[in-house]
Image (cartoon, rainbow, N blue to C red; front, side, top):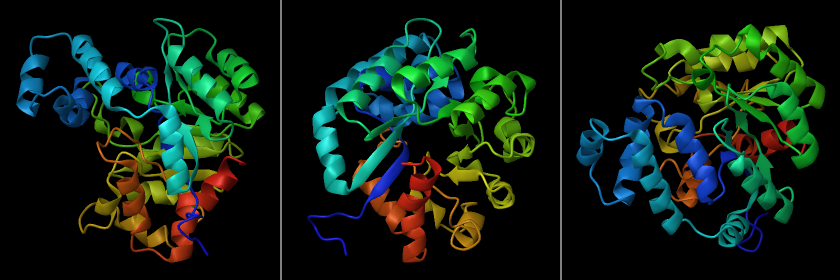
Length: 320
């Protein structure tokens, strides 16, 4: 039984490292879509002493890149050091953190190199799961090289960034490379705030087709498929190698009537209890990681299910 000296273990499959280069890669990736800046900028605006109204007014006449750079500078001041962060992870029982960074074609892969250095300092604590800009030539070869020199834990696919749905033929070499390297693929599967794509551009049915074509490929439905949660649950149920994780949403809201997450709480406690993962998306929700974890552990699920969601399933999926 856990004691204050031995906290209950947890694996955060979609978190971060408190490093400005990592956060900058996130903002550069999704900052190109005004809808994401408006949706997630509410928390970031406060860091620079602005109101949401100020942010929306600035977006009308100022370059988005300038606003994003201000956010990066503000975040860099308040983030803990990586050493302090690791100490806090120990106290919370967080055994490992999957870290997404976006490798941008506009310059050297700074964020990935920063992450790689942290992975060398803290082996098996941070799990690199990068996405790659579509303008990078030979993405499959780049993934293979990065895996050889860094040791990737998985690869992220962002259909709205790439401008193609998950089953598009252009992704075939990436899926085959990940299958060959035994790397899971995290696919952005959620309502999109991009104003350049229809809402269902990341519908779970696209990942379903990928799983039909590559049944041995391990797939994670990133962000849980909301608002098509029933469909996401069905995809995870019918494919042995498909998982889902509901990061980007407050866990306390999953249990709220009318939230749309009812199918996950129903089937996630029984039929697909072995297919759900915990992801925090810290610090994007603007909450301390402790609160995100506590909300997940307080869900109305069986204790053995909570343990599967927060630890056992990730351990098995990523072969840790």
